[in-house]
Image 1 (cartoon, rainbow, N blue to C red):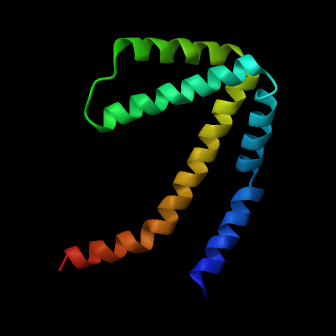
Image 2 (tube, helix red, strand yellow):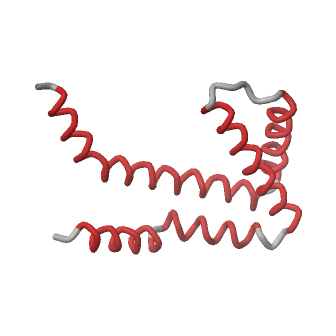
Image 3 (cartoon, rainbow, N blue to C red):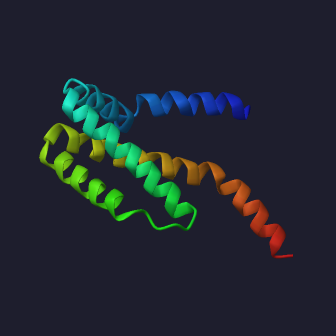
Length: 116
């Protein structure tokens, strides 16, 4: 069994999955609305900045937190944008589960080595 072949097979399965197809569909619909698309872009930009600060152990500025809250509220008011976030969440869960499954053999290997 060639792991590279299986990886390509997995990539095809991900592309064909309902979660990925729903994400594509909702994003394409949301991109039809320039205002909504800009809201999502700004939300993602601030979200990334926020996460980077947290990973460094720094507290995000209050203005950033307020703007994120405001954007999240505006996104929540627009059904097509809310569906994008929901689809991203479901796709993220799928990818997290796949990552956990794929990395399990390596984790088990190292755990068994540490017990000795």
